Image 1: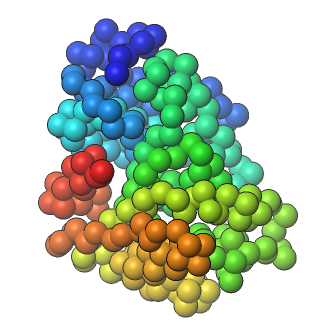
Image 2: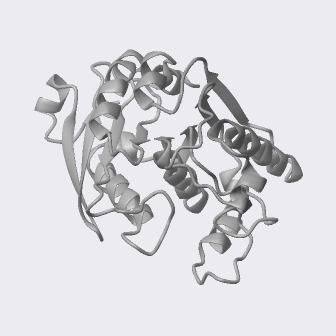
Length: 271
């Protein structure tokens, strides 16, 4: 693999290079980490949570990127431009933001010509799986770290909890997700959650509907999402590819999951 047009002399020497992409909400700033010895693994797009800790993600993935030869891209979705990005909405369109970023990267480097693997933590995991459901052709392997809640790949629940039609919503997201469901389910979907991630903090979506469908904490919701994906794959005659990894002794802290649970390394080494 060769790095082509990217203003990259400085990028090769530094842990990360800043790339700017233009999208409907404005200018998105992303950090691209380029390993000294790139491998044939697809690039990894890593999405931060609602704490907007893009710098922390870049640092956590830097050594794993170098060890595995992966290119890692971490966009910074600021609260000012993307106040709500976890769920695909009409406001600021986070899906179009990611599409614009990928188009910019494709123009810079041939490594981005094919699908990219996608990782997200917490709110970033929410965006990651919903983006993959809308644009399965753009995504390779999917890695979800401790999402607060999920859009299940089942029509028994209305959007955004499932892909059934919602009588109170005019958006076409559920129809688009249903049309691409088989394609979405034809990938490996890996979930990671701390074994101690059982608190019901204020950032966790809590209502009777989601609690009954998905469970009362992130650990239980991850279990049920894996079961839902595997059940949906089986119903379509597809291999069951969803799996859940517990990060022992970790709570809902990215730094703890990365340092103690080895999260960045597990994601980058995943084959």
